[in-house]
Length: 287
Length: 162
Image (cartoon, rainbow over all chains, first blue to last red; front, side, top):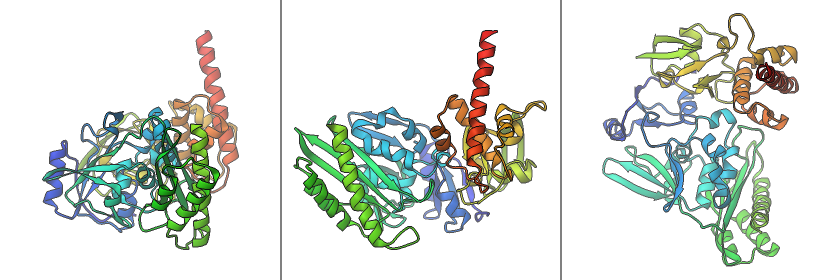
């Protein structure tokens, strides 16, 4: 399968990349890992006039934690996250999601920020990062702005990014040392999209839940936050009863549809089971 | 536009359209047809090649992205008529039936063993989970990788002892 013809630009600087995007107005696409974009172009769901390959831009491959929290640069591959020892403990939601992204060969090229820009409601990073209150930094012709993920995701494959903007990094606030999380994914086989995924993140405060993040994959028009479940967990002692109630509320927040991967009822049940299982796992991990 | 790639140690150039996929550069421009097109939808891994030593799906990369980089295909495994140990392993353990997925399996296995010379069965299955075998010959493929790991270890022990 051949994509439609396009002009290929491989800029050496971010400024040049932005200038190129500006020149093509809304008809250029940014190529990072290409593991979603190129399949879309081959199927001709996407036929941009230009492709701006950012792989040669310097300084975009940082994966590091510091005072401002965790920074994931635009060229950080899934595989880098999978292998990183940094993504345990407080960043455990991300560390658990990384090895479940697609398959090992795709993880060598695909990027975290590219996955966010693609905004597939079946994407795993969207949920893992939503649960951890992440935001992206978008650079455009008028400078940089930060966009919290709930504002980035507008619908299936639709974001609030302007066509002339590039996500330069994702930022995750530091939840403190007494935090942990996990990500559970049901897939028919390696490399398939999630039937259902659930991201769980908990930041503890003096033995009780300070802040909770629960986000859902593949059961709505975007990755969804289960806000009512998060509220039920906040301030609680994480008893079995609280966990069961949070799981019930997460299932209620899901907006699943029936398809080849399962019926809506089945998927809603998986959300409940995974939320409960994830919360118990995190509770035990932090005990 | 012109693209120059080092393929199996040799610098090769071709005039290509930007939309040309890496797999088609290899197969059609350079006539290296050992790299197969299977699903053409980023699922099966038959087109796996090594890019600077890392397995990638060559149907999901434009040739122009490989400018200035090193690509290893299945043709680059055997040296001077001698099979690479991973090829020997697949031969010894009957790690192929129809052979369609084999080039990709070989390259993904080679990359695994370079990173992890003594993988567990689980690690082998995990590392090859992006490569599909429609003959479902997975058991012998895993055996082949284990055979090669043992061979490489005994070879390096012998070299170390001499």
